[in-house]
Image (cartoon, rainbow, N blue to C red):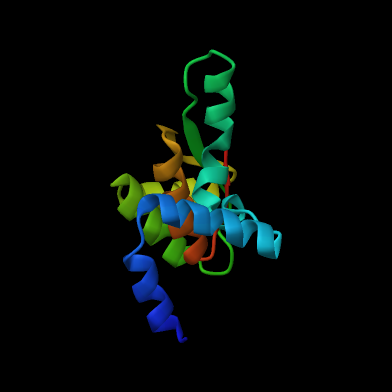
Length: 125
């Protein structure tokens, strides 16, 4: 059975059957579905605070290095923040710099991925 046929079979499964399949794959190959979900890992700090009874945390995206492609990083920051090129260059020149703060885990992860694709080094705090 090829990959296409496997995907067709999965498309026809019920949600319960899919959940059972994931569990079987995890057991058979000694893996966890959580290992394949970096977005969930990035959101984990907020989840821990929620469980402790506090308000959900918001994250901030901190640029730690512009890398070798400084111009691409500046352009990406401009697109993310809506600031002018001069302001974005000043942000990149004053590292570490907060690019955006008070945002949720999904948005923070998305911004981090965009900046890393442009060659930057980024932390979520």
